Image (tube, rainbow, N blue to C red; front, side):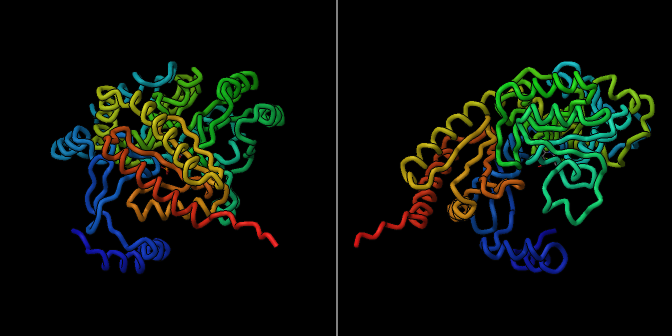
Length: 418
Ligand code: PLP
């Protein structure tokens, strides 16, 4: 069942979010209809999707993932949860095979925030009741996860959140050492690169130093790879960039293949022991549904078979270089930093106003990008690793045109000569 454009907007206004309905009026009221690869079609137009909040490393509707999911729907979409179920076993083994060493246990959940919640419970079960996360970090918006997402605009209306949570500057090892020394057993939760924080890449060696400090202080080291994991950074994991080994690793977004929501917590045998002993200690009705499990295992297979992790690294380097040239050429008076790791790319113009203008001008050229939830002044691109040459051409042409328009709008005012 589907509704046309006007009716969709009207139902959003009345029954979903009137704020979303209002935004859609500014952006022409487009309503998604179909999607393939990097292209999303509305009833009137086609968009190049370089946003998607990091979900579509395989593009939209990768044929192998959709085929596996459709086949599973016809066979056994939801499990009894009493009998053992083979798709979960296959997905768990597939994840462990590509995971950093030592992470032997997999706990499937339905969303990134649920993975964070589970990690918090793993930490508590292991006696680590104090939590430490990084300023600018994003870990989701359920109440436990939100306690780690240190942003007043998301937190303030929901206090009190979890107690005993400290936030330290990202990339600052001395600050983390101080926080760890300041209390009892802790659990440290950080991202390898802060995505929603505005594509913040920490100094080389940061993750290894975090791991070392956690070992010294008996803290649990949780690496949140919900946005960075499964190829986004041009490596299987952000952990691989430094050869670090967390106690717990969180994965989501790309695990879905862009087809069925699914996330997971990977843990060492030791950390998972209480949950392994008592499988009812932390459960969720829909977790590890067979449709999600085949999406997960097939997505991992596609990443490997099509060598998309390497491709993400190559494409990312090409895009970053080209966007830097565009800004140098067309907007020298608007010093803009373009930075990235693989296909997690941030574009930070001198002011949030310029960033907002750019998002809209790209939208006018039918290119979708995201702003960063914790850094409104940073445009974020998380394009698929299956971008074609035609997609790249579209992206670069749109960027050059959009930057030219925005550069003219924000032209320096000539000095008056009297
Ligand atoms: N952790 C990180 C690093 C994220 O980027 C996100 C979402 O953007 C989350 C956790 C929360 O995931 P979800 O939105 O699926 O709950």
